[in-house]
Amino acid sequence: MSQERRAAVLGHPVGHSLSPVLHRAAYEALGLSGWRYDAIDVTEDQLADVVGALDGTWAGLSLTMPLKQTVLRLLDHVEPLAETVGAVNTVLVQPVGRTVALTGANTDVHGIVAALREGFAVAGGHLPVAPSAAVLGAGATAASTLAALGELGCTAPIVYVRAVGRSGPLQRAAHRMGVSPVVRTLDRAGAEIGGADIVVSTLPAGAADAVADQLAGRPSGVLLDVVYAPARTALIAAWETAGGVAVGGARMLLHQAAEQVRLMTGRPAPLAAMDVALRDALAASV
Image (cartoon, rainbow, N blue to C red; front, top):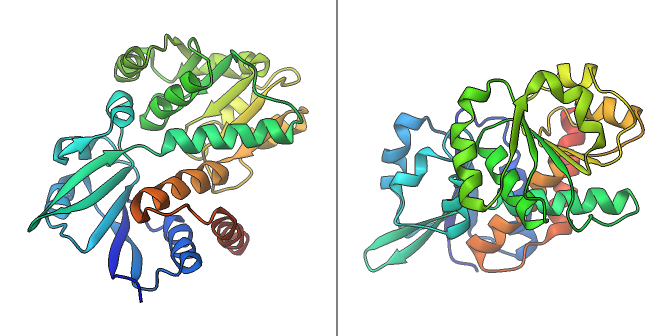
């Protein structure tokens, strides 16, 4: 019988999260019968109390918006990648005597890289050595995307945002990563992104619909839209209709969760079992 441990995804709202599906499938496949994983609705104002109540029965937390940056000040340690990005989506709880130490990590970067590699495999090619890239959005996931692009050899992506004046935090994060983005307004994206090797939309559901309507030309690269509900967004539909290869946000979700499982349990994640559970959950939600 495995030791009883707890984990959960925190966010507001969080009821839509598929993280419980993924983590529970992993625990079952790994034979961790004493482990449980829940979804807990937590606002930014409530986060300090929730984190402060963690004890040695906890293995870790998954964090979704709007908590990925709020949690930084509540942690004992932050891994270098998460500190550079300025966003934590994973908290590891480690017993230390009668208390615990909390370490912040970022698995979104891993998820983005893995999803993009899948996309290029589907396209029948390999990632270029120094790919050109376009990013839609300026939030925490956009910062993780810039880190992922840096890992893939792209140091000068174009970032499309609603308001250039509000992109300061993202540009400061990019500077810490050694990435030098060119920032443009979102209304230019549809006409320009088709020529990029990589396009990543970090915008929430529906926010990229106008870009989809304005998409021009035949896309030459791979699109990753981080939205996973709906699975086929308007941007993905427009991209594929124009002849491009697109990857949905479910692939990023799968791979970042697999890395969380590895970090929290200390075991390689059962990716195939998690993938089946995710596909079943998405099919049931249609």
